[in-house]
Length: 397
Ligand code: HEM
Image 1: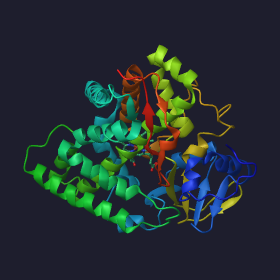
Image 2 (image 1 turned 180 degrees about the vertical axis):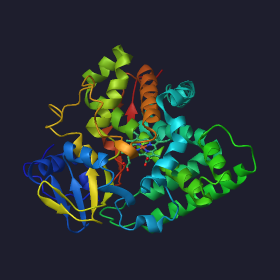
Image 3 (image 1 turned 45 degrees about the vertical axis):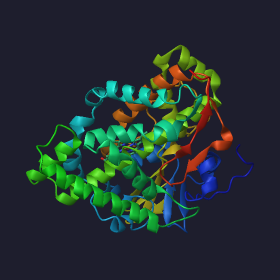
Image 4 (image 1 turned 90 degrees about the vertical axis):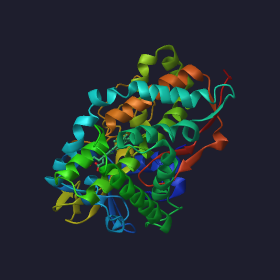
């Protein structure tokens, strides 16, 4: 529930804030849309127009040394990931992977995704109990990205565990912890071995094959291959997992909208878009200011860091009528949940496909599910927004 006077202060590390950040964002959009947090030494942009422009203006808002909220995190996590780079290097590396990630290319995975979703659901259908994140959300996106990078099933739990360690934040933890750094190092060690093993084999047609061929002909370094594998294991997994939990929760809160989807599954794709707008799983993306700029009268200096508050922009009343209303028929595809411009999410088509197929299957098996609110648990991270547990009951099948 919105409080009467939400504090005009944004601490994305505060665990209480994660439960309902929207009143704070609404107050910031109204009273201090270009907000400076002195303790974090970070600017925050909260209006749709400003976040949109910052995503588009990649010369003023740069990614080198940015993207993660923690200062200096790229030095502590020493493998180059193309998300932390700018043109021309960023364009060159990203273009290697683009052909495999278009809507048409990922569409070939639909049958596999559906079969995996069914397999995970069938285990729980007779029992009438199901955790949207712990029983499905955390497995399926990891399984899909692992298929594209040749990570075997028996290793996936470990890789996911390290990704969870990397993103977990204690209450008000403003810097990387030992657990975060260790998660990264474990993943890097694993992917060094994975790369070495696969270099001895003929490269496949998947994302790993693209990387190994590029390394062979000098277009990627060994460190870039490992860095990209880490990036994909995190980006391809955590946000999609959380989107599934967020959507299950919002459809439970709005049973009349869920009924619409059960009666007409063709509306599910639109419900995925509305969930991304209403409660997306990527909260804040960070940029570094590449050249001095004044925004709404506030001077941002070269080198400053800026948080682009995606989930705030997507609730901006100047952009969306009744922005706090969840409406699966809204039809807004111009939300910023996947970012925009040169760094726009590489996996957006895949994430959309996964979420649509998963909910087509979920609503067949448990159209009547009821979430046990007391069992909800949140993941705490300033970027990734969502739950680690969304337990539910439904009529057993
Ligand atoms: C609901 C799910 C997802 C959300 C909300 C999401 C969100 C985002 C956002 C906001 C960005 C922009 C980062 C920036 O501007 O610096 C991004 C970039 C990226 N995403 Fe996703 N993502 C999702 C799923 C995926 C998946 C499934 C993959 C797997 C391939 C993926 C891979 C990437 C990569 C590699 C980038 C970096 C692109 C670049 O810098 O050019 N994401 N994502």
